Image (cartoon, rainbow, N blue to C red; front, side, top):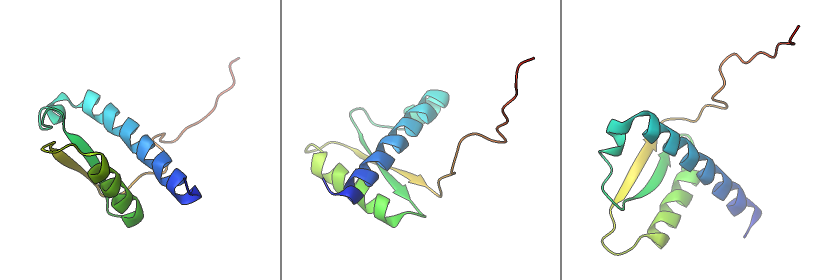
Length: 89
């Protein structure tokens, strides 16, 4: 596997984890996903990752399997907002 492909695979795994967290936090979202669906990611700011996600999804998609596209406008650098370490007294 090429270095760039490894990086894209890692990003896809991270997106999959975040997507799972989103679905758990918003059960109504899960109701919109057909059973046995395959999810591909479409990220406006990362056309290379979008193309990779689509390529992998199409390569692993079973005949007749629904394909759901998760459109993402942009990725935040971190989910932590204003993190601050404090020393316990």
